[in-house]
Length: 156
Length: 156
DNA sequence: GTGAGGATACTCGGATAAGCGTTGTCCGAGTGCCGACGG
DNA sequence: CCGTCGGCACTCGGACAACGCTTATCCGAGTATCCTCAC
Image (cartoon, rainbow over all chains, first blue to last red; front, top):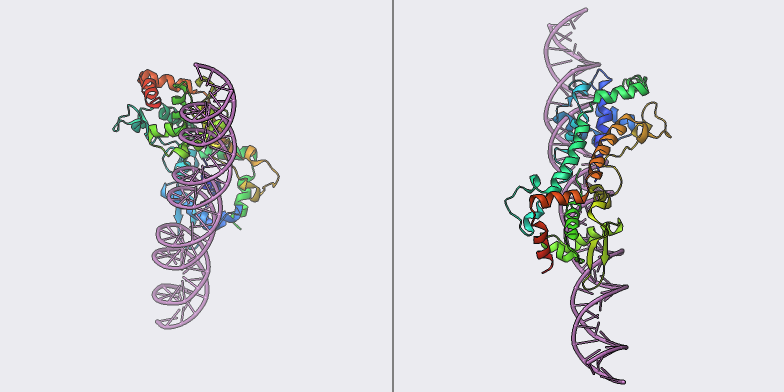
């Protein structure tokens, strides 16, 4: 089980975008961290589809945050890139077993499925409780000049 | 992000094995739920490597639980099949960014990595707190004859 | 000097290939069972 | 009748392919900019 690498990239990019007023093209964000530009662009597209970012085409265009950092949770970014489905997916194998009812709703009744879902719910709750603004605050508390450095690097 | 299907199979199999005294071959467990026998065997091998199950070769052989259900948590089974690594993996992209230190331990210092790890920790804690005995109790409370039905199906 | 028009360069966006992990399959090594055989 | 031996069937275990998703790349559609030119 492995989360898409785009999640990490997107989170860093969102923070950087919040620290910059003007739109930033994907190619420049990619140059910051030595990432493949076209692929990073693909991930940012997903953020646009989710309403987290806005895209501006043409010269002086690029991506920018649609709202403010406190309106976006870690869960929002994860769902935007990974989709809304759970990692554990009940395939209702009990239906084929002894005493199994083909039309029973096993994802909602099987004890195993419920336990796994409860654990994922705890994960999602933790992600939803933490906004990008919280993360940004942590970063700036630990390295107050981080935003300035990013601004300097992105506005060359 | 998708968890291996083997986790679901292994959890169901562990419960069934606990309800049966004698070793059960993988082929019979697979027949219960219409699963590919050889592939299920592969998953059970992972449980053996993790010390959750024991395997007995030869006729009248098969798999059985190494200990009791309350000694095995959901996390144990997940780790046995998925490995110990986190789903979110910090690749230290900050090291290549402005003000990045190539030798800094970013997985332990980057605010994004820490937040994601905290969420996964909540998930793991929930999984570790729930033993297979708890799940079995839930099953038998909801369907008291489940163990009998499995016993009847497996001891044909 | 000023406004219009067009070429241009830059952006996103989706369609199109490679890499890798999960899924699935196969055959060999080992082991206990069962029957045959000799005492 | 009882002990021993050999064949056998059954099991796990690891090595070997197929599929699907993540990763990566490319080119086209659209747009703001800037230069040129006519008035």
